[in-house]
Length: 427
Ligand code: ASP
Ligand code: MG
Image (cartoon, rainbow, N blue to C red):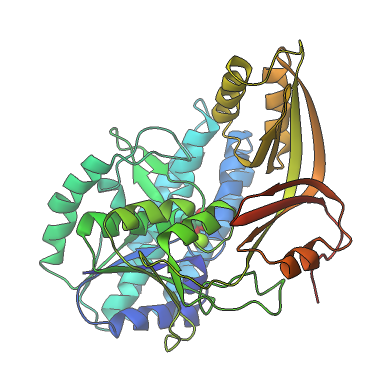
């Protein structure tokens, strides 16, 4: 058994959807296929959820209409025999969302977000599965919300692994007795009460890893629009190079520091079950891609990760008490409650500094919650440069003419928080 994951970019046009489907058709053995929402559907659905929550019902319905049309058009264009039955299935999903959009919001935004946004994956997988059937793949569709059970932390559901493993046995395994390919959704799950939840943006990789681990899959492959994992973003660094082999330990650090290769939560379930992860190009399947497993790699090039739109937030204890101990504990609790994650942190005797992804809304809430304890200061428009396996050369190249605000160094990793200048690294 293998697990394949196809992201939004691999099904965002007729050609891409067809070629992704042919990758499956040409792969022998049993395959669980985890698929994201098409292209930018999740972003579009987020707009629907926002309009609905702001009581702009008409706008929400109009925005949703565009998403409907896009999916119907795609289905019409690629399906020959099964368009009508597919349309009926798509309409069931549309109706569910529209019912909700006719309500007035009385629960939290995050709750509605998940009920609305989850439909992106349901729609894409219905169409994808029907196309696979039309090209002769013995495929079945299943609703993963019956398997990926989470708590009710909407927008960031915590997966209940034990329940999921039981559900894999009782729901997924029996389906595979009747088919070779099972198409299902990434990113979504459901609570005990069968309310939809999502696992956080880009969470489909994580879904694939959870399912791979539960199935004791021989491998998990993430099909992407890049040749392999690279040591830097090739859109910014023209000399970026492919990394053919990586250890779980290295990739988890890369993902943590913000490399947008895979979702950071993906690695743990795979590592714990010793399942290799392949990152491969759906545009050119002959390329070897990257293999990620337990083997440690001796010679890695410097790995560069750039995070834009950072804010440096500094907290100073108002009464000059030391930051360690109880003020620090309280601060961490407050940051946690607002889902604010630090990408870099440092502390001195009476102050604590963190670099976070800038969000005005979160910073306003934070300053309200924190004002009794700390003086808070924010510096925005910063960029966080992380270099793993740094060399003097890379440091020099990346910090040349930059105003360094904060710096942190360990034997493997150096991080610089710098003032953003325009068009930083284009060569
Ligand atoms: N469709 C979701 C997103 O765009 C999940 C994913 O693509 O992995 O975030
Ligand atoms: Mg995606």
